[in-house]
Image (cartoon, rainbow, N blue to C red; front, top):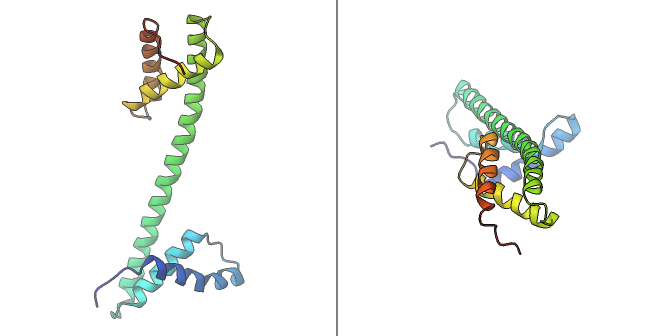
Length: 152
């Protein structure tokens, strides 16, 4: 019989069946870990091969893949959080730059200009290049001084 991954519904039913064991034994599993475990049990229980070492190797590979995906997600979330903080600082600096260049503008107009500039800058640059994005936003602002954007 060929290896076939269980369906999402089968994995959810398998996780539901394992959940009482997790609770009774106080196992530190999150729902994703429980689903990974249920999926592995269902996948390898359906195999007709008696090669238990191959099963253990396959499950270890699933665990490693899951750990890599979780690490990538943590890194992406951390980068997003760091980038948000960086953009917050840059936006405040940009707001001050706009205020000094356009003292007659209202706070709402200044915020709208800053948001527009950051959107334009990030539209064509990698978010990882936050300093370049900020520099581009300031450059775009400088070009706006000649032709101010329409504000709603």
